[in-house]
Image (cartoon, rainbow, N blue to C red; front, side, top):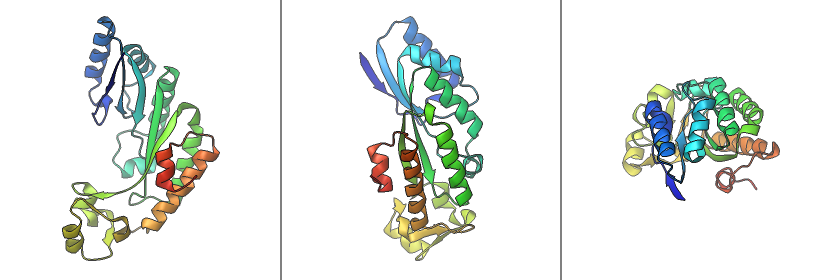
Length: 217
């Protein structure tokens, strides 16, 4: 059996193209197994994921990033937690493995957001095959946070020009923080540890990589 890993940021970016590809794979009776990134959206439902399964899809990695409506809005996500729940459930029911992730410490995130995110993760645990990544926000070159830090209340430990010159790819975690509320590298890591422990305690499979990220056993 042929194995394919799609490198797109999301297989769901062009819904009609994805459906057409699935029909072609089925009609041509091509024996394959494939996986790729996915984002929850209003077009995907049980019929969509059943078709994906029939075509050979064995795993989808959902870039959830935010686990409540507030943090989803902070990250400009076009979906909401209700849509994410519907997609994960339908994908799971179709027999496709679901991998998920989270981005922690975006400007504007609160402790209440973390509490609600943990509640939502546990609520949806039956539809999660594994929790793949627990990513603290990185100030990467080219990102909106990097290009317009003032817009997001981001401040630096040294002059911005000096840091950008010394670190052209990304700014070290210890060299920046955000305001309203105050979030620095220590707070981001503490939140990541708390989320990781809650995931483990809930019996959700947290990958070895995510455990390493959060520095938990």
